[in-house]
Image (tube, rainbow, N blue to C red):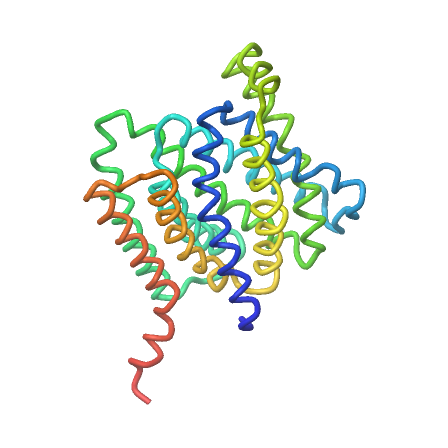
Length: 292
């Protein structure tokens, strides 16, 4: 992958890492599914009036909008609202790397290398370490919701690859139209009309700033670039750059939210990052170890 693409991928992951902090702050005052609906509403409007529709099957657009907007972020926003720490969520969500590689192998015939299999196994051990103490307490549900959100991200990555080399700005903008109504409907059902309409009536500048950050740099720019990179490079090359997401997420959570991981969570997070590192650098190491 060219250096320019690598640098842009790192910028995207930094934006995503800080977005966990923004989401955590936002769901403190706004129902989570309503906040997610506003995110994608602003990502789609007014851009759809100026950005041409992507030249791909409408089912790709609808599927990407559903798995990214409704499934991934509906689950993630709700998990953060009911107790998932932002720093830990930024780590667990990187399981999307291995979900993407798995789904690409099963659905698209992309064979993972030995280092990717090893990296996935190591990262799975990290998830087990994080999950173990949570399975007996109230943390199990938000943790499992976050893992399902990561799997949904993996599916969305595969859909974007299947869409091919299309205008990715248009792809992101038009797919964002899919999410607001289902998310708003789910918020009305789960939170109740009184809470939803009260939150809309009392929306403040901080909430609007959170929505703007989540809609424009995080969704339109970052996911547009990510989908562009996935359309031009193998999934196993692009997705490991998400290694930097938990770094930005943990630093931002510590500095802004004052979060600190429990020791077992820190160990599990470190093991996940180790698995991602094996995924990123394992191929180079194997080439060096082979006899010349």
